[in-house]
Length: 238
Image (tube, rainbow, N blue to C red; front, side):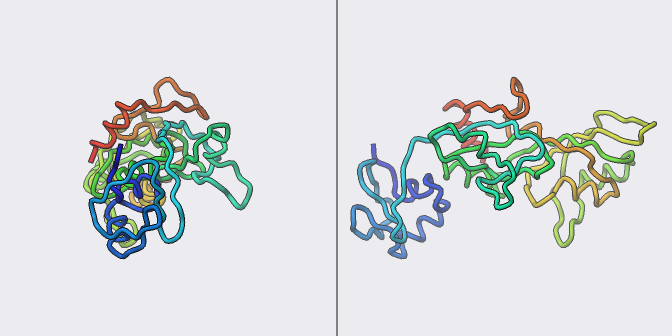
């Protein structure tokens, strides 16, 4: 089976398909030793593809749904020696990378994959993949604060896109609330900063859903591999 050269490069996680096309046009890609500059060129699995003098490794694609615990870094390595999400997959023969990230103290649904094209597709802002978070916040949201979150709030110079807000539980005595927030962006500390923008601190945070996927059947630290049907459906989320 042959695939377009730019797709092979994207699947290897080197760059997005559009960036791969620019690399090809710039003469930075060789196939079996020959520079290829024609878009649409197809290659087979036995042909060697080299980008900037670095051979790319092609392997079967695997994507896992991981229930990330709190106190774990969403990276492959950590120079401070803290536990990373990759540690949970150390026994598997795949080089897996997180799709996006969850904060150190945030738990919940995180995708791990070696499919670079899928990762690039899901993380591209234009695709607006819904992410559902459940936060325990200090204080009680007022109607005008809920309205602000739904409309979008200012975080530094950035205006967030409209969000879905649902209050799940209120504890008047402790002055806390459990709030579900649905967004499709992924800015640094976004959920925490959105609540901070309406004067509420997040005490606990978890991501419960990503697109159509949820954590059903998993406990913290567990994972399962996505089916081909689920991966195909994710690729149609754009």
